[in-house]
Length: 141
Length: 418
Image 1: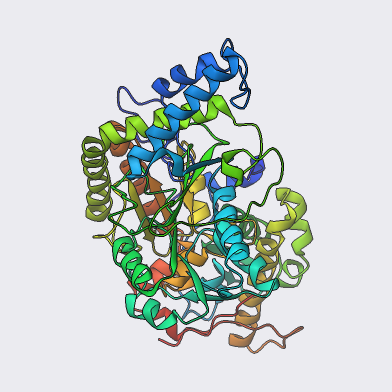
Image 2: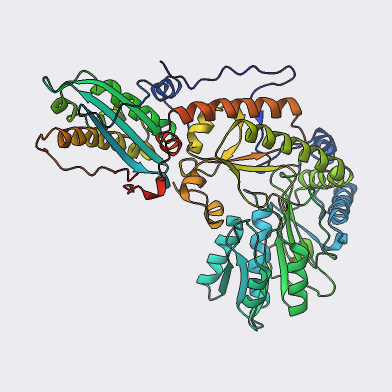
């Protein structure tokens, strides 16, 4: 499969790889996908409670190059946005930016889900009403 | 800290990129094979079926020499070799030809779940046409249970088809024992021996094989040519032709013979026979070196399929918590293949790995290294270094690896399948 230059760039130099303290009240964590499906994304955000601006975004992804690129791009796009603005990012925007082929569209869907899940987690922690319910995989450790 | 997945591994002297290490998919043509083939593209262009001039005789003679070279490699006689376009055709001819010819005797065929699609899809077609097919499971090591086979044979069974070596995990089925069981029960035994012929000893008499498929391009011969061994004595196997025409190949496979291809296949078999022992030892050494290097540098790696019963050149390994396609992307100057869903047309992970009882996540993480005649120790060292480097980097990116390192049991997480 031929990858677009942007996918290759994000794969070679993924942005914002890392882990935030998920126990912090300011941090929202979204864990989406499943190992059986070959894709798991964890996207974390640290939100300023005053401004509701996403000040930091980190990800780790198990998945193909397109999945890594989609989540890397997602962190770039949401950083500095207010959470309500971040929710406006659609998977189709990611598809367009990375020139994903049809078989890789699910990677972009997963990235959108990851954004929603992370924001949903932050809202839950901070008692902010959900705009739309999202399922979040929960670690039972 | 910035993360980067690009590798800075130094390329050793004498190694040129890209490195080909996918010899189960196909193998490069041996220069000695090409040399043998060349005249049959140019001056010796005759049709082997032309009986009345020297061009035809010359071609026919070359074909007969090739038949002997192939027969010798598998302990057969030259009259038992039927030329085809490759192993897929050989498998189709064997299964459909026997099913049709022995229809009066029975309609039951036994095979197993990790066969090549050339067998499985042919069996599916036969099922649509009223045949009954039993697909034996394999154990965790990839081998069938001989007791399962014995139990599956009934009075309607006409054929057992079990591959000699698996194309993904390289495991060697107990062919001789299977052949013996079939002979005792009076059932024909076909084996798809594409991956094993020329690599490990195969003897149609000692192994009780009645019909055998082989291919040119897996043994450093040309593509587009293969053969089917069809036993002539004890028992005499009959096969209904699936292609009608001029009655070539004892009526079993019509069509003008691919003389250059056949000459190449013959030469490839001759070389394989002469060099089998030394080549097997050479490949085993390379493979073991690769495995040892990977295992010493990485945790959570494991070999898929039996280690003991395996082709000398096969290493199928899962690098758990790293997805196969992303690994291939990082090692794109090395040609290997993966059981990851993302690399398949169907978006399903390898059915062979799933049949071993491995979780889909392990199947998604698998890489098949197919070592061959032209690989070198320096290439193996580069491949090992590169794979280690990329796996370590991708694990820095892997939420699963981080969670496992923290002691989280991934099986206890409610994942959202998507």
